[in-house]
Length: 81
Length: 261
Image (tube, rainbow over all chains, first blue to last red; front, top):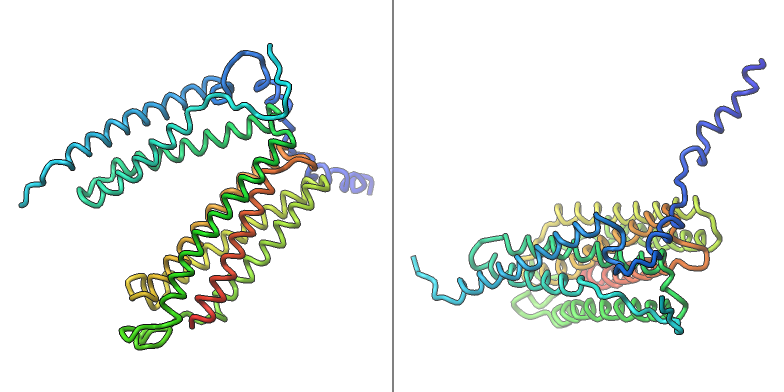
């Protein structure tokens, strides 16, 4: 009977919503993004930000050139087959 | 370090308006190139650039508001005006398609048989799946309001549950509508009936998907403790958008599905 008394406590610990709850990480983020380092917000998060920004800008410039290339092709009369 | 003496937000220089503009350029020119030269590269590039821009721009807004504290009451007021004006522009967008529908259906031409629905069209029964869809969206309007009250009262778990339910109802609507599209006895090519039906309901469906995505981002942010009981404008904007989507459906249901059958 004694070991059964402990069951409700064990059950609530195993299934309680506080058992696997996420910790509030907002204060940590607030510290990172309020640091006085002069960085603009779009790269203030670190290396990942910079890499994603570089990838996006590369696609932007490459895409602009590629659209101008197609504009050149489209402006010439097409050969009828 | 210089401190501002006003409550407004002087935004850091950002590359996202440029990348977004180039993305729009690639999408439009890509569409033209796809149609004329059967090449999808430019279009795909445009889509990727648009997604990258949206992710980074909105990520930065979350950082500016939640992590840097720039969203003071006057700034929030501006954001509210902005969202309301955007939704108003979307109302006008749908107004056009309703105009087209009523133009064709109020005075059906002889080519259609002089009647609406036109001769040969078997419309969907408005009291089957369309009525269920109406119930689903109305219920989701209730659950999103429940979520709002939960957030305002600081009930974290309830907010997560009701917001999740709202999103699931949105997915259910999309699933049901996709099934209807598949089973429909008419297509978009079936004259002006098909055009008005699929363009109006199609754009509505796209807005349901956009709204569900916005709510899903809000769910993630609620789980990550971004919202407080006093300050949760991102969620309010998503809820406003969701109610707009619901209202458009009600007009669609009454006009196209019910009166139009």
